[in-house]
Length: 115
Length: 110
Image (tube, rainbow over all chains, first blue to last red; front, side, top):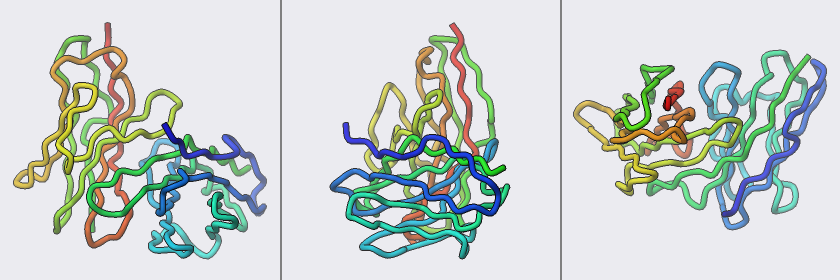
């Protein structure tokens, strides 16, 4: 079964540093997403991406976040200047379509720890 | 605004017993509802979506628009069903975002 792959599985960074989280979505999927889950809290939507541009973003996705699909296979989330409160599990997901009850395929997540 | 509520953070049953994980939602339009499962230290996996009315691993869920609920049920729980279960909603007018509930940790005891 095809999988969404995320690297690294765990990243520790110092406050104020930039981090890039990487994802390889399923090859025939067209929609890409980032979600995050702070420890003990619910999974929260960050951003969706389609046709090489952001299609929707949440209030959490402020100017310090950006996404990119640099080479047609990778999908990255960049956090420019990390804060302690950015510590969370970050999940990438992809889907074939957007409507009609399509479920998303999630990656196994990157645990980001900001110290 | 859309919202998903899973009132039980923890649910414990014995093997062979029926199980129901509750999910209520708030959304003014026609929602798309999903159940995701996360086994220990693994990724979120799609379990069910209401639009396909399927039964996966013995689980079913029916969308009740009158009660705004999408409860997950299984008549006979198995130990391997122990996992974290998330109810999620996608609203037609909110684009592609999934709104998740807080999750219910199901433990099936032998």
